[in-house]
Image 1: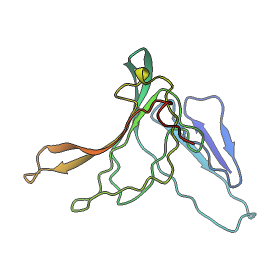
Image 2 (image 1 turned 90 degrees about the vertical axis):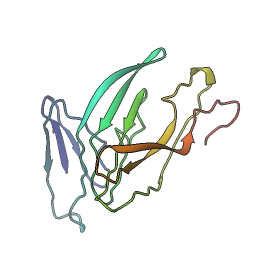
Image 3 (image 1 turned 90 degrees about the horizontal axis):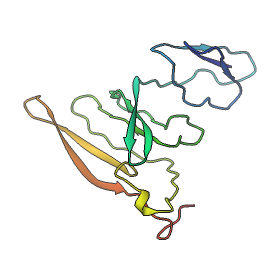
Length: 165
């Protein structure tokens, strides 16, 4: 059983069995987690990831979007998931992760699952309606980093051209 109680919340959520709880955001800089086990399951342990994030409301065309800039991840490997995982990706959000492995190592990623929908009117697409990644290269003198856009960009796609299953 996992009991999640964001520090400024009056209600807690409890999850049992094999179902993973969704991603949670605390209401302040504190999130309390309580793990309780019994003897009914053969496997033990858990794997929990956490990130510091500061949500910011940004305006884009005629709508407001919540922008989540996650703190850099310095681990050698791991997994990132959207806010609310395993539930659906929340509407009107932008989430940005920065993966920075230890010095001397490079990054590679494998997209395990990607579920997209199309936009009915391509005129409603803007620069934030894309999936892109950026390569970061450290300078030789240890100074500022150079950012290069990679050639892998998935644009907003109108329904009339392509439909995703």
